[in-house]
Image (cartoon, rainbow, N blue to C red; front, side, top):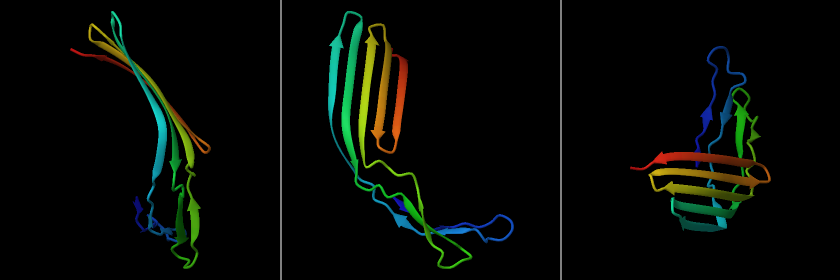
Length: 131
């Protein structure tokens, strides 16, 4: 991922506090290792698909800094730090889908990414009609 160099400017007034940002290239890479479980069950009313996974993710580059400086003050560079990415995280997911013999399909899923600096959770529900 490449962040190009850019400079701020004032829409009106002087540019005393305008910032210049240096270019930066980041190569985010991550390794993942985990388990996935799937189970398909047929019943008299339709079929069930159950899925679960647990994955350990390791981020190799968690640097979230950019170098900035005031345009009107040469040599005033400083680093700006963004939100730190978790180096290690656990990725979890569980889902269930039921396909009724009449064509209705319902599904639900829950996913989460749990790290030392952040937690992300999401849930989803779907209702479909296949014909």
